[in-house]
Every structure is written in C-alpha cells, then in structure tokens.
Amino acid sequence: MPLLVAIAGLLVAAVVLLAVLLRRTRPGDAAAMEQRFAELQRGLDRADQLVRDEMGRNRDETAAAMDRVARTLDERLALVQRGLGEMQSLAEGVGDLKRVLTNVKTRGVLGEWQLQALLEQLLAPGQFARNVKPSPLRDTIVEFAIRIPAPGSDAGGMWLPVDSKYPAEDYARLFDAQERADAAGVAAAQKALSVAVRRSADDIRAKYIDPPHTTDYAILFLPSEGLFAEVVRLPGMVEMLSAECRVMVAGPTTFATLLNCLQMGFRSMALAERSEEVWHLLAGVRTEFAKFADAVSGAQKKLGLASEAVEQVAVRARAMERKLRDVEQLPAGDGSEPPRLTS
Image (tube, rainbow, N blue to C red; front, side, top):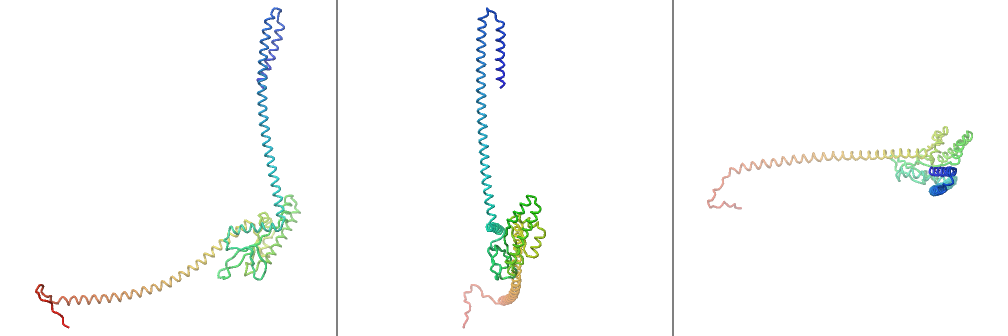
C-alpha cells in the first residue's frame, strides 16, 4: 500500500508538471515539448508497470491469505462436526445408560457385579461365596456371603449376608428436586427413599439373618456413593436400620474399608490359632526334653559304672605288672630251650 500511494503521488506530480509546461511553452519549443512528452510517457509507462506489478503481488498475497483462511475454516468446521458427532454419540450412550438403569433387573446385575469385584479384590476365594443358602431351615439364597470363622467350630464358621439394592428412581427424583431447589420435592423424595431403604432392610432381615448359622446382622450394599451419602443424610436412618433391622448400610468405599477390617481380623484369628499350635508343640518338646534328661542321667550312671569297672581292670593290670617284675628272666643266648609245659 505505501508503494501504491507513492506511485499515485508521482503520477499526480507528473500531470501537474505537464500542465505547467503547457502553459509556459512557446511556439518555438515544440521539439523540446515532444521530447519532454516522450520522457513523461515513458515515466508513466514505468509507473503503470510498477502499479500493475504491485497489484499482482497484492492479489497473489491476498489469494494465498484467503486460501489459508479457507483451509483454517475448513479444519475448524471439521473439528466442530467431529465434536458434534461425539456429543451425539455421548448423548446416545447416556440414553442407553438411562434405559439400562430404568430396568430393575439390570440395575441389580450392575450392583452384583460391583459387589463381586470388591469381594474378589479384597478377600481370598475361600473367605466368601456367591448364591449362598445361609439357613438350612429356609429356601432363600443371598447374593453373597462372607465366611466368618468361629474358634472351636467344626462347621467352618458362620455366614455374614451381603445384599445389593439400588432404588434408582427414588434417588433420581431426589437429585432432580435438589437441582430445581424444590424444598417440597426434596422432602417428598427423601421420604420415598427412606421407605424404599427400610423395605429393603426388612427384606434382608426376614430372609437372610438366622443365628447361629449367620451373624446377627447383615450388610445392605448401595453401589453408588451419591446414593449412600443421601441415605446417610436421612435423619436417624442408619441408627434405625442398625437397631431395628440389624442391617448395616455400606457404599463402595465404606464396604471396602469394612472388608479390610475383616481381613485384618481373619489374620489375627489365624495368628492366634497358630500361636496355640506353637504352645502345644512347645509343651510336647518340654515333655520330650524331660525324657531326654532322664536318658542322659541313666547313660551318665552307666558310664560311671563302666568307668569304675575300667579302673578296677587297670588296678588289676598294675598288680599283675608288679608280680611279673619278680619273675626271673632266662639268660639270653645259652642255647637251651625254655621249659615245656606238660599237660
């Protein structure tokens, strides 16, 4: 642009100069005027060429810039289109998840899967079982049960029933009411959630708790931390379930902590049993050591008697040696034979 302005200024100056020269021209200066006109024409041609070149460069630069802008816009539009496609896929996935969660049986399967994953992660295979019949007097089967060892029991201990429940509709209504800041709706949803949890706890108590085949309490597993927080937030709900239904409510994190505590208890009981075995072993070693001491004492006595007998043999040997010293030796080299013993 600065170059175009300069060229335009030169053209204006040339035109002004031409006008001035025309006014001052005399009749005898025609040849000089023609020469000046020719020079001016050449200058104008050069200026025109410069203007054309500059405009061509500007046109090329503008076209390149427009191409870059067009490519950038195409890329941005492609990203936007891709994002819209991903959002649509996500919306479809959310819709599928919502349809899944509205199915009671599917919700139960999801809760069982999460419960099984926690048990398999934190306990040994022999410390829990699936689809257990906790009471021999009932036909009910609990989803999962933890084996609690009982000291001195030959039946393998007792069962701790664990059942998973997921009242998703009541929790969803409570969540929506909280989002709308609807106090009346929140109170109604909390009441409905309280009734659903209490019904589940009564069902667990009636079906699965049967001492001494089971513990005197059971666990109600809620597979969502948000749902567990809302149940705990209900006034007096946890205390009522524990006192009246003998049911303890647990979310994923709380249940994992409980399993860790149970695992430590199992290890302590195993150590206590091993300690008792070690004490029995030490008692047996003590008895055997007393017998070993008696055997050593008897051997020592026998060794003493043998030592006395050897000493007596040594005394007799020395006495025999003294007697033999008194025996006269025959002269050496006399050619006589020693006397023969006659029978």
